[in-house]
Amino acid sequence: TRPAIAWIGLGIMGSPMSENLIKAGYSVTGFTLEQDKLDRLAAAGGTAAPSIAEAVRDADVIITMVPASPHVEAISYGPEGILENARQGALLIDMSSITPQTSIDLAKAAKDKGIRVLDAPVSGGEAGAVEAVLSIMVGGEQADFDIAKPIFDALGKTIVLCGPHGSGQTVKAANQLIVAVNIQACAEAVVFLEKSGVDLAAALDVLNGGLAGSTVLTRKKDNFLSRDFKPGFRIDLHHKDMGIVTDAARNVGAALPVGAVVAQLVASLRAQGDGGLDHSALLRAVERLSGA
Ligand code: NAD
Image 1 (cartoon, rainbow, N blue to C red):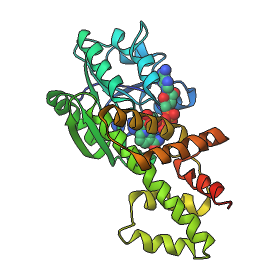
Image 2: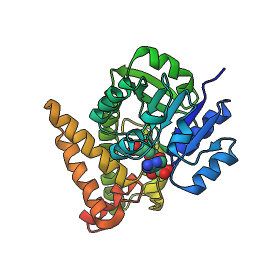
Image 3: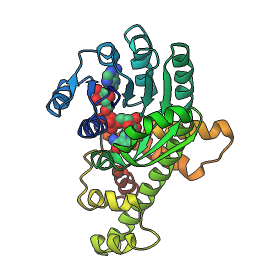
């Protein structure tokens, strides 16, 4: 029989991901802060719980998908948290993108309670979540990965155990560095092309067929063309991730000269009130710099 799943955090990613587990035949009991998301889970065939404690009590596997390290700590620790209320032997899979150190500390605290942990952040965006084609980068022990693998298979396509606890988060930090720099490069090209009077849609099509082509260019092309920056992946979250990768790289003595500049542009977009927009809004930062 399939493990009973508890899902904490039903946002842009958590809602479609948990629904994919329901479609695959898992029973899912969820908790999140917004009532409309709880209603959506129930409508999809899941069970809405009134609290984290209630959601996790009978679960074999607990999956969390919340914004950042402080949220993971808030839902995991304390009398109302996951570690205090999950049963011994449960597997906690945190799929949020957080600092590697938070994942390492969580695994240690959970071990004392007889709870096993994997860090399993994802890439592929909202579309990847909806279509169950996410890339899932996992840190933890092989035996736990093996238990989680059928669940991951219902959520994603590329699923890799990267190393011990925290490794999934380190790989995700690298992912966010690459994505931000890639979006920035595309945004600079868009402003350059438009100021040059070239047809932008045609240019992006042909660019995408060559070495300049990328998943970013494919997925964000419509955002660039229409200037519709509805998220998607919010600037606020990418700001958090640029902080994670900058810190983690400094800790190991890796230089990120271009990443550091893009981190500043993300921070400046946020400071100008654009934190709620999709990260393709880096185009706005370049436009402002170019007086466009
Ligand atoms: P979101 O803000 O849409 O959703 C977060 C959810 O967490 C919300 O539903 C909120 O209710 C819930 N939450 C927060 N605190 C809680 C608490 N104390 N108890 C219960 N629920 C709580 O964010 P998202 O876009 O779904 O992103 C979630 C994570 O996935 C982030 O770490 C993000 O970096 C990562 N991620 C997002 C994307 C994307 O494209 N959106 C892609 C890959 C990874």
